[in-house]
Length: 227
Image (cartoon, rainbow, N blue to C red; front, side, top):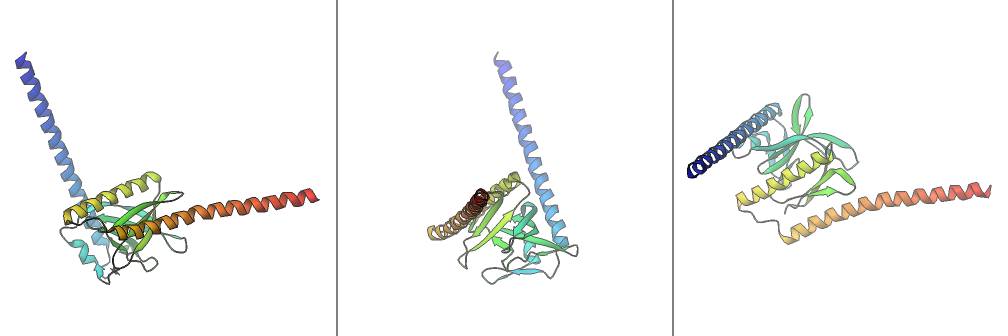
């Protein structure tokens, strides 16, 4: 009957309103928790620590306190150095930057690896997978002050994929909110070419090692037969 349909429609509308309210509350709770987490981390950061950006500007603890900067994602990652070692780092993804901290004497300082800036602008940031390494990702900063590449690893493939998605989403949001267009075709081409070259080299090295091993094994078998 019409009355039953009206009652059903009202019930559905109420149900939708309740779902919207729950979603809104969950969002507010999540935002509050992120603010508290950022404050907790800020309180542990050494007051005098700083990092120099690619453009020469100095980034300090105070810069993290800007009201418009909010925490989007955080977690422990492993920054691969030029020598192949991994440095434990706390990665913080904010609304406009991605930064890395390291622990020292129970305090946080800006990470110092290979003299690279530990704060990366999201404006011209590209994220790519590391070839043959399911837990690794490249962060390519196509800055006009000079491109820079970082190799970051996580504990699992799922964690790596989540970080990549979080960063890509944050980059898109930042560009839209700031009215920024995507990096120029030339910037993208240079950054993509650099990433492709590294990935190609990574694929060649294991192949070279396999061929070398097979040759050595072949010689060993031949020597045994000669005897």
